[in-house]
Each structure stands twice: as C-alpha cells, then as structure tokens.
Image 1 (cartoon, helix red, strand yellow):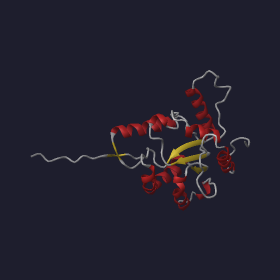
Image 2 (cartoon, helix red, strand yellow):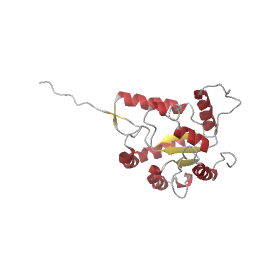
Image 3 (cartoon, rainbow, N blue to C red):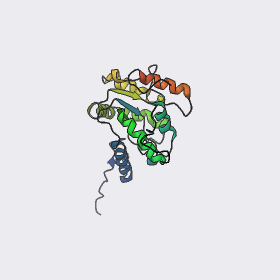
Image 4 (cartoon, helix red, strand yellow):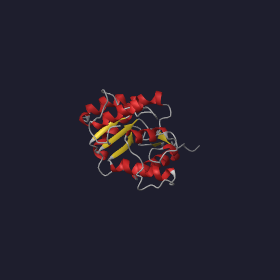
Length: 207
C-alpha cells in the first residue's frame, strides 16, 4: 500500500491561519487595492481589528457597504474635491477622489488581522495575542507613521502592546481609549473624534 503523503496547509501571513488558495487570492486583492492609495510618508496610521468580510466592502475598494467609509470620511472632513469631480459623476469616481484626498493628507487604513474575522467576539482576543507581534513589525519597518490611531473598542488591548514596544508616544487616544468612528449623523461622536485627532493633525476647521 503506498504511503500517504501529508498535505502541507498554506498559512496566510495576513491572519496566521491555514488558508485556501481562494483566501490567499483575496488577501492579495486587498493589498493591491490599498497599495493604490498608500501615501509615501504616513502622517496618521489608522488601525482597526480586521477588514470587512466581503471583498466588495473593502475600504479601498471603495466599499459597497457605506457606513464605515462615509462616517470616517465625514469625521475627517474629507469630501470629493468639487473642482475635480463633476456633479454627474458616478459614486466610484467620487469615492476615488475621497481616497486620493485621504492619501494626500498622509492617512492610511491598516488592520491587526489583514483578513476578515468572521466571529469578532470570539476571535478578537486570540487575534490580538497572535498577531500583535506582526503588527509591530509592520509599523516599525513598513508603515513608519508619525502617529497611530487605533479604531474601535476591540482594539483596547493593543494599547498596552504598543506601549510596551516603545510606540506609546505615537498613539492618538481619547481618554486612554481607541477612537470610535462616529455613526452616520452622530454629531456628538463626530466632535469627539475630531477633537482627538486635532491634538496631533490638522483635519480642517472645527465643525
């Protein structure tokens, strides 16, 4: 009887999990989308837990699902430049203009896990424990930002991780917590978000 040859699973370097070829292809696609709008010098690195589950909703897609994208752009006072985008232009053109302005300001969106986390409540703590060293390496040797803004309450444990790595002075926090991206129409949360960022970067005149 021939000896069975053990299969060697592909380990994704974006999330550290065994991955199918389709998973790897999707990760590469996300990296390619983000690379188009990566600034040469990063003024502000935004770091969230993980990208959207669907590739169609990737921040740099731009996304079909609008809440996060529109809320963050509004909080940063980024609108499509009227001189460059005619009123009749479709949404994709306007979104590309917003992303170009995001890039021009030296902003970049990154993630602790570079692949989606399908069960955020169950896997967030495990992802933070296993992927934080890789995030630190990316920040130190790849991104090299002037400032780091963690997004969302699930990223709270990362504060201590980054402080222990010597990156505490780069962190932009609100009351010692990550920034919360305001929901659509939440003017109070938007003001808090903008106030936190204005301590280190200019994002326009106060609302």
